[in-house]
Image (cartoon, rainbow, N blue to C red):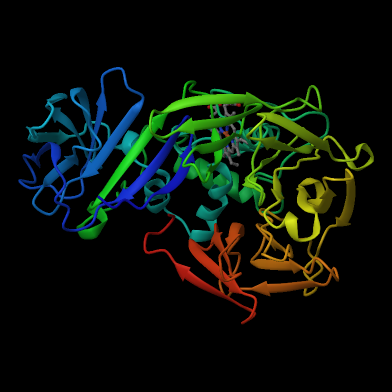
Length: 476
Ligand code: HEC
């Protein structure tokens, strides 16, 4: 069977997606039909199976006849716990299934309406349900990187109390979760719920939470379930050994081994997708007392892994053969309490010997020569149209080691020519699209996410224009 795999990460787990070809004839381990009292045949229900004692969960989706099938290559014999995901429903039964070797087990799955719909809503569904304008809702995109919106909608804070909540949130390290918070040190603060619109934002939040009523005074909207081609997918989820692990970036190396950065802990993670076995390599602490955790994870041409060490204010290179780190600190005279080196790019270091690094404190762009240990500070870059500093989130290098700066505070994409230092700005048509991260493809084109535009952007430097594709689902 052909499987195309994409990877992404979320708290305490790693997921792979495979797309099933339409005429899959592969042997089946477990199959059945999904139904409920309200819908005789249910399409688009995610059915998941986890073997007793295993750390791996496999999910498939029911088709237009309500039928789901797990390929035998994905489920070895054993007793499996079943679970489902279909907004508005919960699993009535069966809760387990026994998979035998060489035969397809049959399990028709019955669903019943959930008694707790709010608990099932995801962030996109909450945002769609809220009354108010898109601009009012957009401010909430700053509140979902450490926890879901359910903390906000279930709170009973007034507008004044929200001002204090904002103040508390600005003091957390970005890789915090309510289960594993870390405070920033000294005078470092982040920009959440600040600036001119902050009072209006507090009032808006107090109008959509439970400060005035015991339940929400707006109808809860849900997204439709997947249909057609979107149901032909196998999702494999791997549990990580501890709940507080926050895998941030994920890289698959040439041997198919998965590497991930820990956002809230000082380790580099490795996982073998064949067995689910996880290894963790401790990264040296170089700025004692400051938050720990890393963000960007990228490979250089030789296959070494590089991680951005965030508030530890440096970068680390991991040699897979010797399993050792070499670490470079940002020069002390450039460091403040807010120094933060989350982003880097060593992918084209073989071209000119330089690794690009960003210090989020004042959005400074740095360049490291790992051979000599010399750092260069190119400073901050501004939009020539209005003098506003680019709030950079993501610095992908192209194949010649020129650098793109993705401006998370506006809709700009900047480009620094590595040889001449010349700076050019490009922008798409969507206002406040908030470009972030990004990757350069084989044709030297830059692809990136537009966080505020709900879109995907592409810049072909030969054409010199940003093209944008808006996603069909709002708030995706
Ligand atoms: C950098 C991480 C981070 C961001 C971003 C963040 N929060 Fe939080 N939030 C936390 C943590 C950690 C907790 C749990 C500890 C606490 O309550 O202080 C929390 C808890 C909360 C709670 C529940 C607290 C209570 O007292 O009931 C609310 C409400 C909340 N956050 C609102 C917000 C809002 C509004 C925003 C956006 C302006 C936001 N958060 C952004 C980290 C964050």
